[in-house]
Amino acid sequence: SDNRNTILAVILSGLVLIAWQYWYNIPQMEKQRAAQQAQQQQTSPAAPGTTPGTTPPAATAPAAPAQKADGAPTTPAATTAPVQSRESAIAASPRVKIDTPNVSGSISLTGARIDDVALVKYRETVDPKSPAIVLFSPSGTKEPFYAEFGFVPAAGSTIRMPDRDTVWKQDGANVLTPSTPVTLSWNNGQGLTFKRTISIDDKYLFTIKDEVSNVGDSPVTLYPFGLISRHGTPPVSGYYILHEGLIGVLGEQGLQEYGYKKMDDAKVVEFKVTNAWMGITDKYWAATLLPSPKASLQARYSSNLVGSLRTYQTDYLLDPMTVAIGGTASTTTSLFAGAKESATVDAYDKQLQLNKFDRLIDWGWFYFITKPMFWLIDWFFHIVGNFG
Image (tube, rainbow, N blue to C red; front, side, top):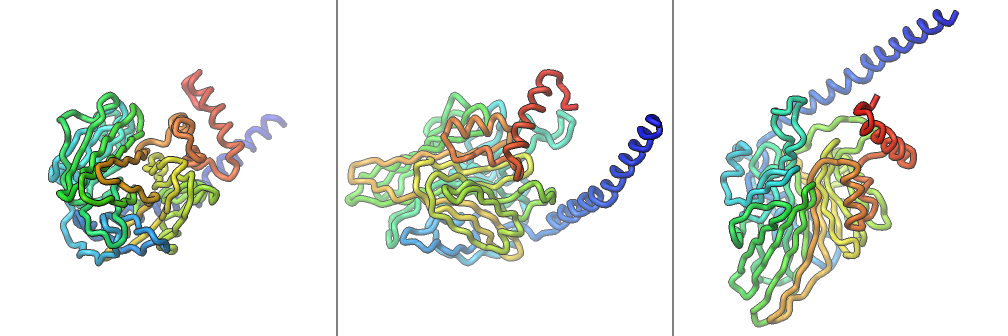
């Protein structure tokens, strides 16, 4: 009788697995394949420097730019420029190399964009010699994805600001490593000198410190901003229990998740908050803006249509800072660009005193159960080397 029950249980379990594979897994794989084919057939992305139109937030301050330094609504240029290879796009501008145990890539001196990041410890296939996972890519490539930081002038100001076309000068010639930050500078010819110091740790955290010196004849008011922009709708896993898209914990408004379809419907979502972080997440990787938890900011998620190409952006605009005559003002922010490793994410949450940064990983509705379960399974894995 026991043997019969065991055999019956095995047969029923096999039928359940076969049914699951046939009615769920195979349709999901077909859906992913169709999404990837649609992505490949999309029209070419916007040429470097083209921008989606935006609607400024309903506030007295200017809007954070959509790849445009003055934040004004723009008329998108035609999106017929040919797609460049990633290598050609990277070679088209002067760059500062990034070299760490976990990250390789470069920072473009044109616009001072962080737009070339590969995760060297993760590969496209199980073959350790396969290409490293690419997270960020420059404008003009097949899948542009990048972070940008800067300043927006006060309304009505005509003072020149560094923008996406500004060519910064590197002070020195060193590579960006965990022990050697890089310093970039630019003079606007009107009394303002912008100095940016970028550092990186041995994981995935960039720290960006901006200083502005004023030797002009009047004080200057500036609004610091940060943005992450992604061109094109990426293929997603399509699992209901896994969020992929725009994400953040926005102060008292808590966790705000917008998938790409939901974002297309909403167009623009705005938040006026403190103690916030925001970004764009994939299944295993993410890029997030990490302003100071004490900072007051206008945060925004947006989806724009440039020709037939969708662009997605998450950005923030900080309260204004005034640079006095003969004075200097500064602001510091952070950028996470890497793998969603639980221990690493938790460490940044504690180190930077962020607002529930561990929610970058989708633990589901039963967070209080699933995360402890993960800790336990992971603990066993590190002891015996096997999740089973």
